[in-house]
Image 1 (cartoon, helix red, strand yellow):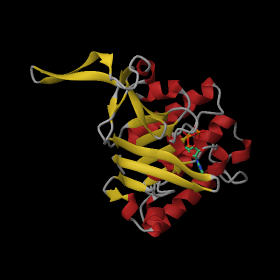
Image 2 (cartoon, rainbow, N blue to C red):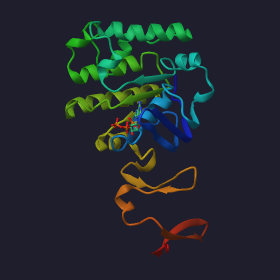
Image 3 (cartoon, rainbow, N blue to C red):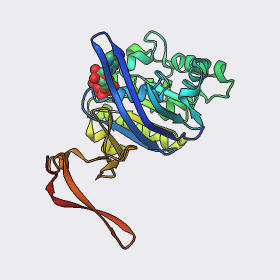
Image 4 (cartoon, rainbow, N blue to C red):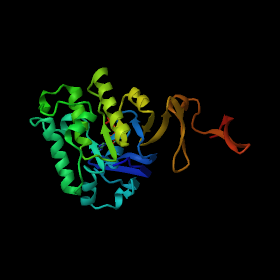
Length: 280
Ligand SMILES: Nc1ncnc2c1ncn2[C@@H]1O[C@H](COP(=O)(O)OP(=O)(O)OP(=O)(O)O)[C@@H](O)[C@H]1O
């Protein structure tokens, strides 16, 4: 399967908790092209994992629209979402162990994920050896998961995530427990999957370097898209409600109430700081 596009429009997610409601996402607008690689970065509690859970159909948004390929996830039944996950959407949860059977071999882990997908969708599946090859685990089919070192275990979790050749691969914090070498191997595996299959890849990470390496890093801040970095350049982002999210490093230069004039010059639009703050 080739890569799937992703679109979020004004996505809100509220957790109903005992101590009161928690607004985890408060209006996320985000478009991802088929075959793109993207990192979701941002401070702890900003809403990254919640967003990925919505993209994977693990939860439904409280409001707004989430689409993957031609599917609007909010309109699907639980059974349809469950079929989609594990076939067209691969989800790799935070912590490799949560995705794997520790006493089984790597090959059996991949085979089980494939069997689930084949039952759900009746699709033809890749040779497991080919999948292990993609994540740099060629020749390790017979190894027990518990015997693999941490970096290889994380790549084993990726192998399970891509077992059914999904068009969208969602990976939560794949490098957080790894040293630099392990991190490079995991990122290399993701890049190979993306290059060879065209899979759209979304990675949640605390590590800004991971964001830089993937080329596109979307910052989630207070439950919204905060700003975006592409190929080393920072961009401000216009949200669906017309607010502009500035990169954090320049945010301090524009206190709330800062006025901009909007100038139209030679067919382009320029925002010019008005030089004074709004009177309060
Ligand atoms: N099941 C839950 N019930 C109630 N509140 C939750 C639940 N899960 C997350 N939250 C809250 O939602 C907000 C966003 O959490 P989320 O885990 O999506 O953030 P995150 O950016 O992924 O954080 P981290 O990087 O620490 O994993 C936080 O305030 C968190 O405490």
